[in-house]
Image (cartoon, one colour):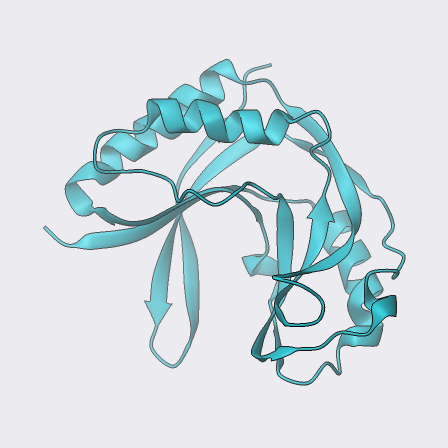
Length: 184
């Protein structure tokens, strides 16, 4: 049967990537940071982890069902941050606005449509674009979070079901298994 590593995300436009790249330029020298390529950046709505191959079609249908009832969402970049903190950064990120909770609503609707055998991880939803991973964890200076990020607005109008495909020595790749336009 086998398993496949899946997640549901939204892609962001070129202008968002441009604004993020400009904002993080002063931080490119951060020791231990592995910078994420633009084509791998996205806003994860739900990480599903390893899903049995025979459940993947049900996940595709769930993504379509969620998109059919949820309208597009207007969002924007908000600033830089790190998980779990700037004192011990494992992930450096650019924040994405969800002040109205609409991106979180997408995730909740998706959760309700997922088939048995496909459940999202239980972490609190914090929309962001991962821009770098740090190993060992980095201690970022206080002015990192004060970095000005152009608050580029963008419309979330499509959900994408991705599979994370291992790449041998490299970071692997993300393969789009389905795209579904939001209602509206």
